[in-house]
Image (cartoon, rainbow, N blue to C red):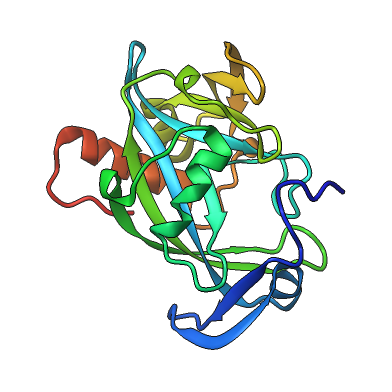
Length: 219
């Protein structure tokens, strides 16, 4: 297994389920083995392109220790030991090749994310979730092949329909890591890292509300 995008010895602060620090730090591999709560950021790119409103997903790298090749938040990264969510925005540049400050983002809440899809790995994250409006095509980004497989741009209405109306597939555009060309693709519901809470659906609703100019937006 490649460890280019994840260091099993990287230290994470162990948290309580309420997000409070326990005062202990452990290696990434040990945190995932023991099911410790730890913090991460999720940055979701959304906006209006020539084709209309969209939501962007990353296709997770094939060598990730959890949910490989699943469609997930545009950018996702763990907080290193002692790091703040603002400092963790380094992940945006590392993953998709464009920097952003926390002040440019819309915070939309905190999610408790749990994954046990891989035997021997219990991933329990306290995810700080943000929306980033970018009214441009995904080709303005440069996905890092060491971090993710591709970026996928899906019409916002289709994300809502997949999870709200039960359609099984939608047309999308995909930007493979190392490429500058968007190519048409068909996305099926089974490809999403959705979780029991239909996380992408909640994010799509929040993005729709933000585009409408709502004062309060939350997942």
